[in-house]
Image (spheres, rainbow, N blue to C red):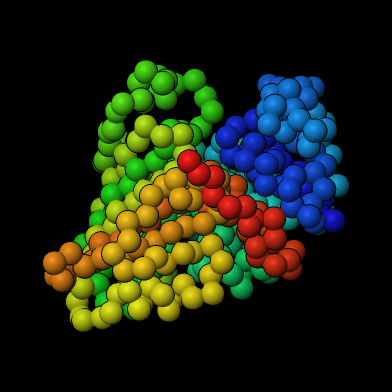
Length: 342
């Protein structure tokens, strides 16, 4: 059994990790930390886990994380880089769901996240945890940087076009919307029911933190820099991301066949039949990313529609997928939940 610790288990990503890991046949939950809620029974905070998680939250200073095989960080940025060196020295693998190890350029990281990066060596070592792009590297990794939710949807959506070199790489456009849970489990005016309900708005138009992460991944796939305009939106739903991507073809290609071939055999990427329009509820509470590709009026603009659950394939589910790879398990282990409908 894989002995698992979670640092920061009280947010939406933390409880989603718990939901998935408690159903995983090869996992033993050992410790879950929280500074503010130490001593509280997990099931008291999250009644959905009654009878499944008998643990209490532990103060990080008293948690025996070194006794774990792997530790997930579902924490604010900066926590994982501070605690990872000691864990790695004790042979514990690390999966960070924050951004500490996602962006390889230190100056770029510090520009977007406004904190100094203190672990350059670990940043160089960390593997970006998008399995559909980095599967072999993840399997050998000690430390994995779990991708952001928007970053997962946008990169998977553009990946076949970028890898094939069939689109103008200087003018990619990503228009994406996320459910309110993407803002985290904290008190904020913009997340209040009366503010977010019956409303739809863009944010981060001048620049969002996932932008450099997406550019970095697409540039690696393309072998050159890419030009990307990324505009996120808040939609009045709890879960889900819907990304509409635009790219201009530079040579003729059967885009449907291109996508089907690229993702053939991928357990968690579903390329839908031509003409499909996937919706977010079709992936709710699952680790599935659904993609549909279009060429409106047969023109040279490709429109790619991507949906995922921001808390699962966009966060906790992908982290478990990475754990499976790191420990030599079948990638699908513990992750075959059917989406919840309605």
